Amino acid sequence: MDDLRKNQFIEVVAQWDGELTASMLQNYFSISRATAQKLITRYRDTYPENAFDYNRSTKRHTPTDQFTPQVTQGTLNEYLSFFGQDVTEGLEGVNKKSTHLELLSPPLRNINPKLVRRIIQACNQSLRLDIEYLSLSSGDMEGRIISPHTLVNDGIRWHVRAYCEKNRQYRDFVLSRFSADPVFEEHAEYTREHDADWNTWLTIVLIPDPRLNDIKKQCIELDYMMTGGRLEIPCRAALVKYLLQRLRVDTYHHKPEGQQIIVESGCWESLAPYRMG
Picture 1 (cartoon, helix red, strand yellow):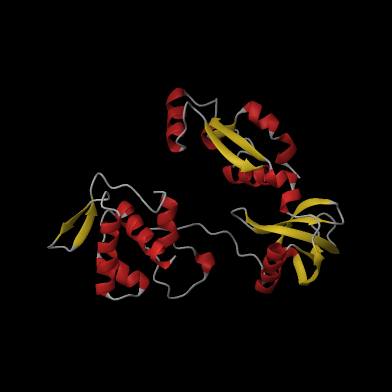
Picture 2: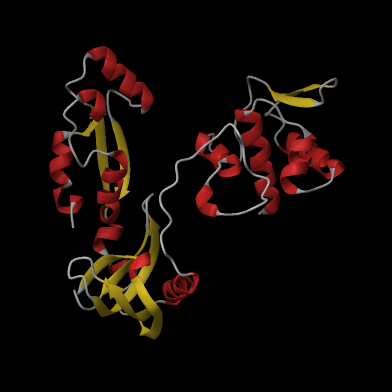
């Protein structure tokens, strides 16, 4: 896994920076220059189709036009994973920042590591949890027995998908609203395999706002890499409402330039059972 990460670093830097040096690997992974150079040589031997040009005077490797990612997907998000300045991580002294990148970070939520450890253990071992949970609807701290199966980050907050014995259905529980430490109970009867909305996949179809003129529609199609004026995004039914919120298509902007994209009308109707709740 460590070697894979180093090969991914080589590809990401070569693709997005357009040049690679041994010192980049040396500084990022805290390894010797000789080891860094060996890693570059090994990558070139492993993936000879990914040709590099080497400038002896600058000691820089530059990818040729034939360069194609082999161990990465070639997305900018991968570059951010190495160099993004994400203050939510709160790690000091880690040599993985870039002064040329900046990420907006959501407010920190109050999440107890001990809580997360117990939830993950319950997920791994299919255990029930006895919890104390602050209900937003009632405003009261309520005792619940839940059977968690997956931790989810919706881009703003963390929650756990779990079967709730009080409501007799699968629900999402925001991690920052748990109180005290969950208590393990016996084996869970309701697991991820029984969660119909989790196991149901839907397709969200996005199109440019019809109010835009043809030129502006073409701009939106280019932005979102649409094909034939539409973009299809697969999504679990249980997560549809979060994706719609992130795409900002759950509300309608009075100006088309502010709206930019909408969910295709037929698709919007089909998503009705999953948009709220």
